[in-house]
Image 1: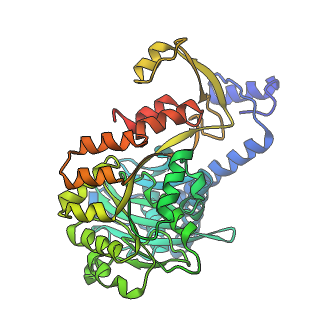
Image 2: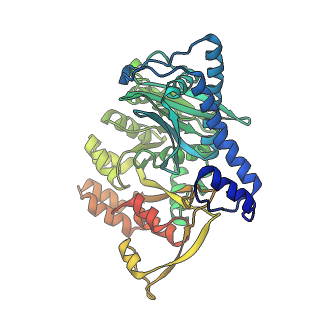
Image 3: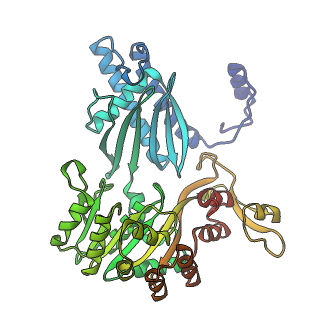
Length: 465
């Protein structure tokens, strides 16, 4: 990248110094300075730390010892560089909107990878001698035992970002070549959003808001880990948590502290589980209850009892689609009449990457390509769609940010009769679709047509569903 591609002297000097053929790309001075600061700030900190640390000991796998430092002066200097490197890494992760940081030890080096918009990207390769120092710094910030390297540990780091507090959830685990650390970034700007802006279609938003305003009942959000369930529920609670209402959450763990909620953490070692908390939670006079996950019959029954006694309950399940939540509750042992009388509805969701607005372009997809994606072919055999060419803002991926895709079913008299009559999941799903439910695949295709995401991304997320 160069701000003046016509400067033949500079280009010739670069080619001579690197013994490579150079293809210049036009960039602004500000973009070049920003990239140099981001990359070389981190690189210089790592290089300085590496030069101050002694040679690594013989690799002993899980028993690999912490790097020896030759003197107190070297230790202080090295700590300073490691601290700077970790700070650079955190800042870069926030700037790139990463949801997770992975620090993975390998035989000869360690990889630093960021999960951006749901996809992992390798951003740096740490020298092996620096890896243990970086992980120890992170463990120290999270108040973990830096001497314990043989057992998994979990902790939290609070980060001040220009007056706004964010949290980083830290998990370390021993692997073949040392300690692997995964840092989940809990950014309030992402976890607490306006419900109108997380990706609902007009019809789905209207249905979802009817659940939010219901006086009592249970509403379930389903989907795999990383599908945005926490963001949906936190955003929902924030919108309905008025001073007149008592909002109580039961979470394992509490992902993000919010002063308007009364958040209760699950602590299994103290026998403080979802079910034990729920047995006593009604004495706290709640109006709205959020249960992190319904995992067993006790939790499910207590949630149903709370709904039957006039409370609005939100929770999550691990199922592939919305209607499957009924089957899951039945499998747990909840009686069908209790499901029919308390369940307001359920919503399955996934996250798709948004097309980058900075490099978006229009193209035409042929009939053969449409058929290849399992999409309907138009009368003229082609359709105009959007895609990202790839640029600096999106790291060349063509995607920037994510949107939810949703499948919402609402309980109806017809579906209640089907549940009590023992109808199959397929029959109930067919009824829900006849009553207006949009499937995940249909919602993804709608977002392709209006230029939010691409056919490739929709297929990646929904698969053959």
